Every structure is written in structure tokens, then in C-alpha cells.
Image (tube, rainbow, N blue to C red):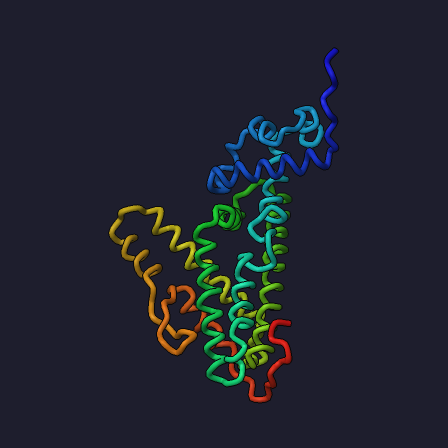
Length: 275
């Protein structure tokens, strides 16, 4: 006697289908290919009953709408961490907690800010350049005006903004930590940390997009020259007072920080810089 297949709760079917669709979309490389996603292939990847899938989504377009919203929000690049890259916060705080002796002088605090920027912003640039999930997220944003019906476009736009806002909030918290720990303040209260985080994030992502473009151009001489400028290390301030190797994106990010922040003359050192 043939046993009945195990029943899968509807919510689990939904989640497994969305995760499987996300995997296939990332493998495809861009949101522009989403229309060519085969529902049968997603069902096989998700390992769920076909009948359950069609109860949730009677038509393929229904599933694609929900998948695009998922890719823009809970299934996006930003879901794994509050910051743009999961390693960045640890890198930044590690520089400071690993060198507490430098907190005692303005020169030492400046060196810590530079080193945290060199390593943290440099890591973010590399992570963006390497991530297929982030490319998918950016493709969704770039093609939003021509994606699906009006209602779905609005849902995608709302999901994109919600999860980007979560990222900005976490980055603002990181910079509030840096301000308190390194004795910094806004140069002008009208130019807030929120402004700084938005400006810096857009800049780093623009560098990464340019890097991806030049890499895709292969052996084209012009693209190769730009790629060389983007990725050849440039000299900048080092933690030990000697020049260190920076990537161009991180070096420019330091200029953004300097445009918004300055030393706080009323600052006093925290008892625990790692708190």
C-alpha cells in the first residue's frame, strides 16, 4: 500500500518556494531574467508538492510578483546583517578595541579613524563587487519602473526602501559609536550622520557598480584602464604613522567622513571603548 506523501504546511511551502526562487534568480545573475524563471524548476528546487504551490499561486505571474517583493525585502542582500556587509562592523570595532593605547591623543584617534575606514570601507567595496545577491538587488532597483503591474511595483519599492533604511539605521548606530569613542562631532548640525551614511553608501555602491562593469568588459583596453585605477592600491595614512595601501573607494570614503565630522573639543574618553 502506497503511503501518502507528507503534508507540508502552506507557510513552509511559501517560504521554501521563495527561497528556491531566490537561489535560481541569483544563479541567473540579474533580475531581468526573472521572467524566464520556470515555475516547475522552482518547485523541484523547493521540494514541495505541486498541488500546494498552485493553491498558493494559481498563475506563474502571481508567484513572480511575490518573489520580486521577497528579493527586494526579506530575501535581499540586507537581510543577513544590519550593515552593508556582515563583517564591516566587526572590522571597525576590532580596530579600536585592539588599539586602546591610541585613544589618549588626537593623533592616535585620527589614526584609528583612518584605519577603521581603510579596512571597513575597503571591505564593503570588495563585498559589493563580489556579491551576486547585491547585483540582483541593484538590478531590481534599476528596472523598477518597468517591473510588473503598478501594485507590485509599489510593493517592490516599499520593500527596497524598508530594508535599505534598516541598513542605514545600523550604520548610523556604528558611527554614533565612533563619534563617542574617537571624540568626533558633526561639523554642522544641519549635516547629520544620516546624511553622511547615505552619501557614503551611495558612493561605495557606485564604485562597486563601476568595478563590475569594467570586469564584465573583459579585455577592452578602456575598461582595463579604469579597472586598474579602481583596484590598484593608493597610498594613504597608516596606523603606525607610515603610508598604508588603500583602495580608491575607501580613500574617497574618508573624504566623505572628513566633510561631515570634526574633532570634538569637549570630548572625554569612554571608560570602555568596546562597550
